[in-house]
Image (cartoon, rainbow, N blue to C red; front, side, top):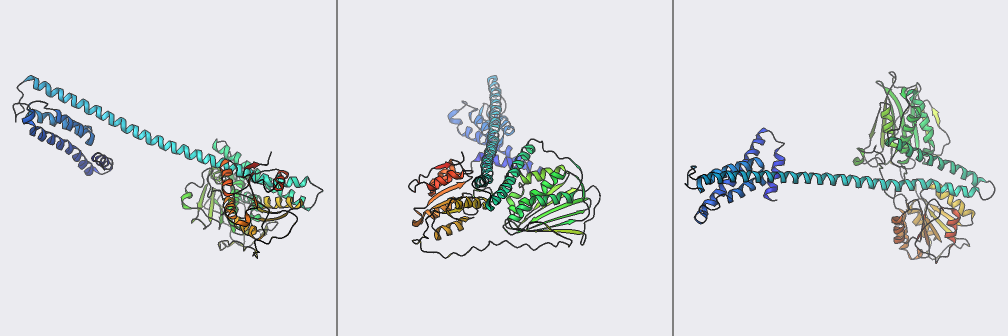
Length: 565
């Protein structure tokens, strides 16, 4: 560290000390003025036999500027005054006396003092400008980093948006293709059900985007009126029941039998609670546990939504309610969503004069959200047997209602369902079939099932897997002709799956077609690098995909195609 840096560091740190420390700091700085003047005087006296009365102020001028650089303006002015006295006493005849015989000597001293002080002030102005420039550069760098971060988040959001909107549209497109082909059948009924479910998901995403736009522009409003909070909760349960059932969760809700009146917006309040339930369902492993409880105490109503899901890491707890924030925004994420729901919840509850609290012990430890809203009147918490208990299990068709008290369930980490054991056959022995064997690897169950149904109706032998590991195992046992591979798989993404498969010699002749909502030059280049033959962007026209499957095996161009024109 240089001497200048050392003094400047001491200057910065000394300002925050008490009066005694500031006094010591001032003494240190002004000691520099005294030391530099004494040093210049000693050197000048040593050179006096050589210089005599010539250049009497040169060394003193240098010492004053050096003091200005190291200690600041005040000590530098003191050094200039001390050097003037030293020159008059030791250098200008008669020596050892401040008496000046010649008027020219007096004029020289005043000129020296004026020039030195002017130089010190100019030096000080340059230092101030330099510090301003440095601070400005730091601020510009900070703003630039902020803009780059905002731009990065915008890009991630746009990519995520495209992916999220393409995924629901793909099974809808496939199901519609099925409906247009042949008479009505059980398959068509199933396709209609899929269309309704995926269309509902698309509407939810679009509504969230619209609400996010209103929120950003300050146009999101709530219409407050006396409502029963229990009604809003029951509406939210009904809105979220499909996703809870789809993922096989065990859900229980304890609701008071008497009204819990608040001043609120019924639709917005049910939307907020539904968002919390929807998040709990998405971020809890399959066959997990979700608990909802409503109570009122001390003039406040509380809604608690608790799960045993993936939890929230500590570094994200402070900004989990920010718009477009995600617990996992990587390519392998499977939970979906745009990072809008929690931000809307906070804004809506704040408009009800309430608060939102989030508690999580970290990843894998589950999450608990608590909404607190002022009651219109003092309500006491209902206890058994005056509470009704909703239970919902995955696969059931309706809510079951009882009147027993709800005790908090013991949450255990969800274990992955055991995979069906496969007896691996020799790679050289393939099951004889006149039809092409196709393996579909897609974590979107609806998309995989609809595509399987369509291809099966076309005469293909189709098998499916919903994650990368199962896809690799099925490919090794039943070596397919074509693999339709999704990219955004949980855990191991599609690129890694393709990379592993291409290392096996028996997979050299297998055509791998990426079928994904992730599109763009970056993903197309990655597809080529890992050995994927074609990159198809969702949504696509099924007939065009069939043409690509039926194309000769020699047409393995590695190029990306979009089958959605």
